[in-house]
Amino acid sequence: MTVLVAGWVALDEIETPAGRAAESLGGSATCAALAAARFTDVRLFAVVGDDFPRRERARLEAQPGIDLAGLTTVPGGRTSRWGARYRDGMNARDTLYTEVGVNAGPRPPLPAGWEASETVFAAAADPAAQRALLRSLTAPRATMVDTIEGYVHRAREAVLETMAEAAFVSVNDAEARQLTGEHGVARAGRALLAKGARAAIVKLGEYGAVCLHGGDYFAVPAWPLAEVVDPTGAGDAFAGGFLGSLDRAPDLSAAAVRRAVVHGSVTASFAVEGFGPSRLLTLERGEIEERCRRFRDIARIPEED
Amino acid sequence: MTVLVAGWVALDEIETPAGRAAESLGGSATCAALAAARFTDVRLFAVVGDDFPRRERARLEAQPGIDLAGLTTVPGGRTSRWGARYRDGMNARDTLYTEVGVNAGPRPPLPAGWEASETVFAAAADPAAQRALLRSLTAPRATMVDTIEGYVHRAREAVLETMAEAAFVSVNDAEARQLTGEHGVARAGRALLAKGARAAIVKLGEYGAVCLHGGDYFAVPAWPLAEVVDPTGAGDAFAGGFLGSLDRAPDLSAAAVRRAVVHGSVTASFAVEGFGPSRLLTLERGEIEERCRRFRDIARIPEED
Image 1 (cartoon, rainbow over the protein chains, first blue to last red):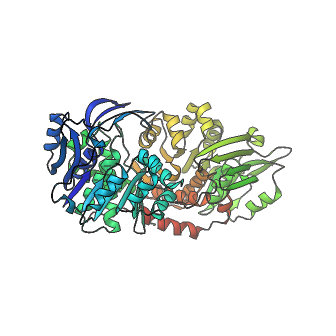
Image 2 (image 1 turned 135 degrees about the vertical axis):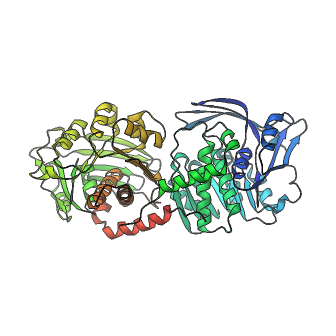
Image 3 (image 1 turned 30 degrees about the horizontal axis):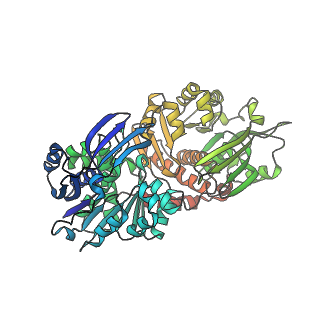
């Protein structure tokens, strides 16, 4: 039981109405791996430069259940960096810069044995690299592809082709609209399936999420957050919680997938309570289970009289 | 068992990506009354001019369960008119004109006995007029106040004061933000209660709704609409379905209110399938119940293994 997480480990500079962080541990793979590690063992597959701070690696090493054998340091390389500023009550984000650094180079090979991972998250990346990862797997079961607007703009068809090779696709509502040309969450979700995705999760931020999977349509609201400190990484935390949950499930039934959506939603609700992945570093499984119970209460529709 | 609906009966001109309608039956009270009539008897309290088409009155008269004794024709008056155009996949609306007409004049008195109505919807109107209506009631039980952005801009404090006198407040997320200054659905909902509202429903359009009532927090997604023809009146249809459902409920318990939120959501999901209230005119209770069953399936969170 293990989730392979492939993506960026980066250093972020983030400014939100709640505060500011610089040279701070970030990246899609970091958030997803920390989230998944609340549920199952994790294999982290990413590259950093030799400028990657020793203290950040130590923080990851201190996390039980995360195998860092796939975290490669590229000699002379520069760790990827990303800067962003949120405004208007977190509803708008300006990306200030993206320094691709070592992630511009070729990916190292997977550590021996990792190609047999059954549960795999391909975080946002060039769709060709995502596809290469998916095709290298020998026993894929619960695989998921995520993307970001940049790839949708530059390589829409390649993103769609890659998505057709994963068991699950994860997008937000803007990406779903851009990928399909359809307005409306339900229409865009169905259009993703028509374009080849096998199952689609459309993330709606503070409004919840929708999951279309094997004929099942599942819609959940969001946890009623009292305070959002930093929305960065919420989608990756969702993916990590979702796949971590599925990795422990006996099957990929509709019920198991619905439970995984709730686990992903609740994990993401914790992630946004701190800067970058800071809240995930200390998050305990019991906290997730307690909030899941309350989440069920909030969303429960009573039967008719 | 009857719901008193006070608001506008109007003639609308609407253009959406799906088509166009002119001099078409509309108005907040029309939509809410037709929606509530799917659940219980309705008293319609509104004014029109003597230009109000005979065929539109005949359509309302043909609806079983709607008492038109409170639909007053003002001699020489002009029926209220409203024109709007939707664009960007229904997500943006331009109001082209609002002709207040007879609704600028004083309201006629309530028909004899109507002040004893227990379930009452005060659709969007000048907050002083809404308050006068609420204060004229002798046995209020499930009363609800709605508003629109215009009143929030011009008379924010008066809107809040009026809302404090109703059992339920109905707003969309933009109005909730403007009334409270809070970003985030949960924060804005809680802030409405802090400002005096006794219970708040925040409508999120295609994302669902949130209801805060007597310590209960309830969040529902939206019905996955395949096609939206015209979003006009969705909020009033929600209010009508919600209050019609509550009017039949033995109490205002959390379970009854949650059921009413689902009834309101589903009724609104039908309303947007046709221009103005056209779909509501033919909607049958059985269709609502069937969609409510499917809605429950879509939103059901399975228990843990």
